[in-house]
Amino acid sequence: MTREPLRPLAWTAAAFGFGVLLHIDRIPLWTVGAAIVCIVWWLLASIDLISVPRRTARSLLAIALLAAVYTQFRTLNGLNAGTALLVVMGSIKLLETHRKRDRGIVVGAALFLLLAACLDRQSLLHAPLYLWHAWLCCTAFAVIAHDGKGLTERAAIALAGRSLLFAVPLALVLFVFFPRLAGSFWALPQFPQAVTGLSDTMSPGSISTLSESGDPAFRVRFEDSPPPPEERYWRGPVLHDFDGYLEAHRLARLQTTSS
Image (cartoon, rainbow, N blue to C red; front, side, top):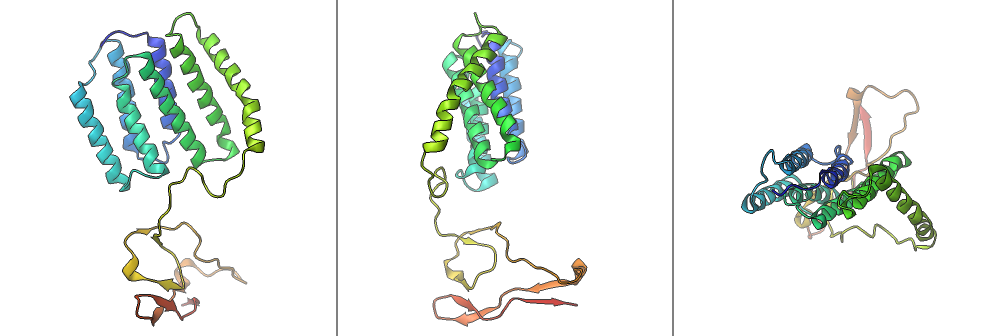
């Protein structure tokens, strides 16, 4: 591997690594571990301590990680699976990063990881982390553009900060005037799918996939102090009215009993 300037490499690794850490509590830990291993491997290879895997080995590793993500989530669609896939593919891309363009692609992947974090958690408590990561990515772009020469760290950080400040008026204009779309414009089309929970009807013959619903099934309010957990029992719906189309209608009411 040809010796490259260390400053662009370090900033690229920092931008991508911080993007991975934004998702450390919502993606499998093995994907985070794979990213850390690839980052360390790439940095060590850049100073000629070890060699990077050959193209065939990288291709096989990419296929293995892709299969592992699919096995974990049973899909490659969705925010969680897509984020895990982006982490492992960005990690593999690190191992074949030799040029300025390659480093820019890795930092671009870090920005997509930032976007995924913003879509998943939109509380103000996470805003400082998102701002810091955006600043870090912009600084990495500045260092990469100058190829680590003629631009000090302080100058790169200041340039990135000014760029973000210049973007604030445009962001405010888009926030005020951009039309609010119904639903999530980044979401994939949702097909009819059975979910867990309570319903008045059920069609067992039409259930091919079942997903877990996070919506509350019902709420309970006690007039007095609630009984111990072991004495609480809620009877679920009893479906026994068959209309000939594998669809049952609920006739029994939800009852609350205690022993």
